[in-house]
Image (cartoon, rainbow over all chains, first blue to last red; front, side, top):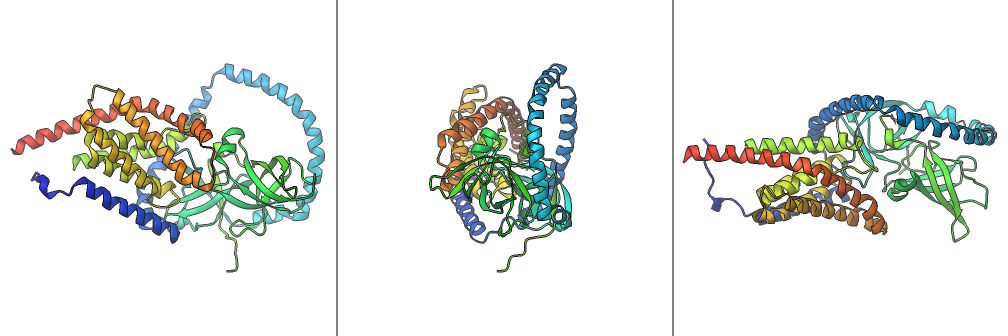
Length: 286
Length: 172
């Protein structure tokens, strides 16, 4: 039977607020300094929410497929016309790019990229949900520590780098994408192996779908737009030689020593559905 | 007990919708913030205590799945729920003006706090840009969703209160 509690026995809300605030602050400091997150909470939350997210995702995919089919013919026709004019423009571009492609192929062969890429052991995973807010670009995948995924493993999508695992639960893993505002990657140009820092940027991503790179130490005009930027061999978390993106714009810094600019990511983050997690971590001597 | 289960389900559903469906339905790469709506709505419908607890748990959920550190979103949402609780006396179910205003302010506060602590401190200083391109679109989208979500929450709350009154009068 339910007995109505008398008000004098309950703690005033003010004190509960104070206690919870202290709890939160302690949690903040503990997880910030010790760099741990979740633990048992991850396990519980993983088993409750991940199956539901998977379900919603499956239904959502079905609906979006249907919605795409219903896209009006008119829009498609209009797009067709636009595309036709684009084809003309692109064919001219293509000729120049073909020439560059030869050069690129040669360089790739030199670096034995093709050989190195498939040698990593990988596991496929599905993206099941994205960050609820609008500030960061992290996402969850449906494989976790049970599938052998660990923190700091690299995540690929298609041919390029999608992000890095920053937290794992038993059946899910949290991935920070390359375009996340807090993401920093040590990169290098493919042709000349000059190092730079690639950092995600919400603003440039919002405006032009590009991210930033900076501190590229090169002579004037040695690197041009379209150059591939890969993860560098001196990075402590990213495996070397994974494609991050293509230089979209490059300019000299005021100090006239380094260059910086913007980079088009190699991965389409708007339509990220399946990713590959490399089960090998970079070994760094400590 | 009935209320706790219902509220828990509401939080779960809103969290799931926010992280899956509304991410797919994002307009101008912005999606609405349902958990703030729930926290704020229960804050002014039910008072400080309930707002605080609901905020705490919704925030914790965000922390576990999407936060970098544990406790930040929990802290922010908890205070949003608590502050909204002060407006319980001025709240009338028929009037939609106050809920809309309160929810708007809650959403703005939430985003401002996130900006200050997670962006401003990392030397991203262009607040006006972030205001115009992230906070404002999210606010508009959230209010659009609120118009529907608020009435659903209101109806659920009224049902719960009616049931509670009935079972309370039985024992007197």
